[in-house]
Length: 393
Image (cartoon, rainbow, N blue to C red):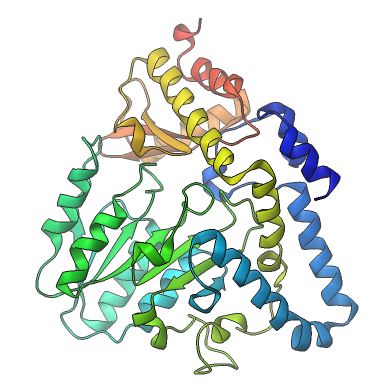
């Protein structure tokens, strides 16, 4: 272990860890959930891979890259609970979702079920395919605030019909910040012959994963968020039964050469983000993956408790459904428009140097707060004062 990682393993969390990142020191960064933030250690590893490529590009691309990708897949597969033969790298979860949805041989009248709060790129992809293949789209209405995971399970169950071909489940909803009862939804779908695609964009690093045990047909997840890898690194995992006919959205030289080889080569590209995932795993494991997840849960819970008390708002879901993020209603009664959400976001940034998403949905304005080991409660205190100065103590 390098001296940097040894120092990390012994360090306390909070602002004392900010120097491991390149974040602007003057800001309160409460939005790790959007694009992540890559540690300097991981960025250095990515730079190393770029330099290694450029020393002899042909040798690297033809001889070294296939070996290195195989090693990376094997290590990442262990971390997420699958095997290297059932895991391939993609640029982001959207690319993984597109690969899955475009590989299915759709029949006219097939139905796709997804939540009304599914991520926008997933909804757009489904709509695009529905228009071209005569598919029917059924939305599972996820109430928010919600009483518990049972209501989510009921929403999906109620949306499934005899014509349902595929159910798409968000492992952690991006806007709501709550996790779904994925295993229970998979268990409901399997006896019906309904395939399941899990959008796990936020899960790797934030939740312990055992993907083979989970049993979904396909699972996509980002590495650039809570796993702390560079932007442009994600994966798609496939069950044994769905392994034979999955292709990347970009068809290239190795088409029909099998999974995951087709995904390894989609034309000339910068592979350094994928290869640097190994350094991100080093970084997370130096902190202790379980400890890391616990810190994020504890920070998010502390932030939710503080803001709920200061603003006089209620937590919109059971506390155990939140992980490293929490979505809370913005106090007040402003109209829940996109314009007002943007105005709040821009004001918090320009006047208070607070980066936090403000969202408009379900007839309310909401804030989604992300926790990360480089944060401490003073970041949340700053947000509490900026939103509701009269509540400051």
